[in-house]
Image (cartoon, rainbow, N blue to C red; front, side):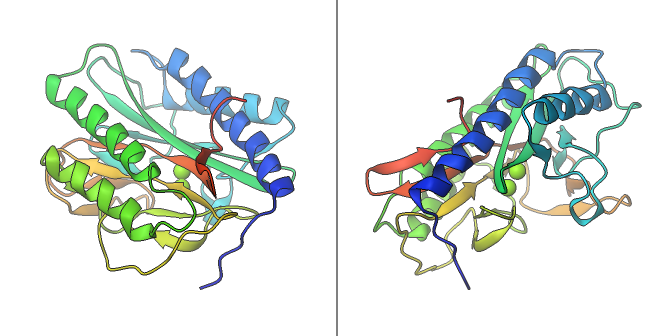
Length: 250
Ligand code: MG
Ligand code: MG
């Protein structure tokens, strides 16, 4: 495993990349409404990233055909935007966004409600967001990565939610996926966090079981029981003073 620790200078560039991702999320929050297509959301995201002199990180990544990932209801991650996919009231949509600016990547996902949603979906969103911030608490020097994973696992268990096992967080920097991989549950990982590490933390929690499958498009991941799933992600710098969230507005 090789972990690339970043200098303050590099972290500051990552904050610029993260700011662009956050700008897109602000636009998504406004745009997500009954009747809009996921292709329209993708077009909005592309324009904002390009107008900020950045590039959409996901576009072309392993052949991914779009700027953002849009994953609705039972879709967990990696859903492909389409002009035929229209949002309807009661849906939840996870939007995952990556932007590369001056050679560094920001990566952040958020799950949004479309109009009024059911109480159990509200709980799922609240709990998954809570699990992200519970994990982030431990993103500081001398903590164990295992503590991040454990805090996410404990929050999921508190709300009796399934935890996606096959996907997780990751180091991020000059490329989107660096070491270390971050499970969203305890795995007896001995890694000690150090200043300069930049890691995307991204719990994916399900109203039902843990298990997921990949659809025939070879991208879209769905829950095996077709129950809803939520996804919240921030790119974070490990500092001596605590977690420094990079994917937020400057
Ligand atoms: Mg992401
Ligand atoms: Mg990620």
